[in-house]
Image (cartoon, rainbow, N blue to C red):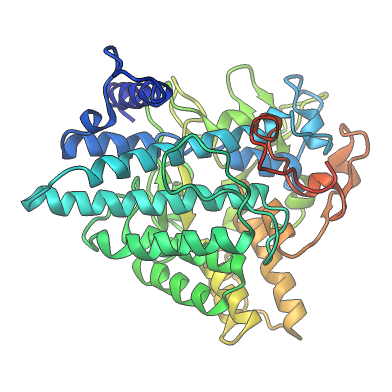
Amino acid sequence: MINKIYQKYTLIFSLLILTASCTKLDFTPSDTISPDKAFRNISDINLGVLGAYALLDGTTIGVVSTVSDEATFPTENTVGNSDAFRWLYTAGSGSVTSLYANNYTAIDRINRTLAGLDALTLTGADLATGNRYRGELLALRAYFHFELLRSYASSYQTGALGVPYMKISAIIYPARDNFEVVVANAKADLVAAKPLIPTTFTDKTRITKAAVSAIQARLALYEKNWADAITYSNEVIATYPLATKAQFPGIWTDANDNEVVWKAKRVGTTDSRLGDFYYRQTGGIVLYAPAFKLINTFDKVNDLRYTAYIKFDATRTGTKSQYLVNKYIGGTSTAPGLTDIKLFRTGEMYLIKAEAEAESTGDAAGDLNALRAARINGYVNATFADKATLITAILDERYKELAFEGHRFFDLKRRNLPVQRLAADAVNASGAVTLPTTQAQYSLPIPALEISVNKNTVQNPNY
C-alpha cells in the first residue's frame, strides 16, 4: 500500500485513540481531533476503510504452520519459536496470541469508521460510495471476528466459548460470546454488507460481492450449515472459475490473480513479507520447511501444486533443509518473499462445496474430481466407497490444496482430529509428534493481558 496514505489514516486513528482516552475529563482536549471531525467527508471514510485493511497480514498462516502438521522445524532455524512448534505455548506466548490484539484493533478501526460514516450526510455519488464503504466495513468486521473465532474458540460447536463480538468502539470489559452467537452476528453483518457492494466493483484487494460470498461459504462450513455452504460456494465458483493449468503457477508469483477472490496486497519494501516466515532469502535460512508428511501426499511428477508450493534444492547440504516452502518465495530483488496474501481462492470453494455435499446431498465426488483434474496432469476420476472415505479424501485434498494458507490446524479441529506428525518432522521438537484433542494447546490461549485486565473473560480449558 502507499505509505503516505497509511501515514494519514494512522494519524487519524491515533488522534481518535487519544480522544477516547480523555472522554472522562470535563473539558475538550485542545491537542486532539474529536471523532466527528476526524471523518469529515467521504475521502476520510475511505482512509478509515484502508486503515482496517492495513491490518490484514499472514500471522494466522504462520501460526497454523507452526502448530499443525504441514511444516517441520529445521536445525538451521536458530531464530526461535520452537516452543510453539512443540506445543508448549501458554497465554503469555506472543507467537500464538499476537493476532488477538491485531484483529481487535482492526475491529475497533472498523467500528470507529462506521460511526463516522453514520454521522455524515451524503448525497449523489458520495452516497453510493458511502454505501459500498459500509458494505466493506461490515464484511471486514465479520471476517476479523471469524478469524478470531477460528483461532480462539474452545471448539466449533454450539455452547462453546467463542470471542466477544464488538459492534461499537468502547472501553468495556466484555464476556466471551458463545460460538453460535459469534456466527450469528457475523452472518448478520455479511447479509447486511452484500447488497451494499455493487457487482461492478471488482477490486480484489478489497471486499467485493464475491468476497462476501466466499466468507459466507467458509463460515457456513464451520457452522456445519451445509445448504448455505453449497449456495455461497456456488456463487463464488460462478464468478471466478478455477485457474487453468497454465495459469496456476503464476498465482503464487503474482504474475496473475486468476481464481483469487480476495487478496491482501503487498508492495514496496516495508510491507510484511509472508515468505520470510518460511525462508529468509537474505541469509538463506529456512525457518520452517514443508513437512515430509505433506511432501509425501503429492504426485511429484504430475501435480502442479508440488512445484508451486515446494522447492527442492540439492545444493543445500549438511544441516540445511533441502526442502523449502516455494509458495511465497517471489517478490523482487529488493523485497524477496514479498507476495500478495491470497485470502480466498476458488479452489477452496470447490472443497467447501464437496465437503458440504458429502455431508448432505450433491455430487461431492464430482467437485473433488474437478479440482484434482485442474491441478494434476493425466488425472483419472476417482470413486469412493462410502461417505467416510469421501470425507477423508476431501480433508486430504484440503491438506494439499490449501497448504500454507492458514487452514490445516483448524480443519483438524473442525473434525475433532489430533495433530499427528511424522517422527521425521519432529526431530528438532523433542518428540512433539501428537497433539491430542484433550490437551490445552489444541485451542489457542486467550492472551494473558486480556485475562488479567478483563475480569469478565475466561481462559480456554486446561490452561
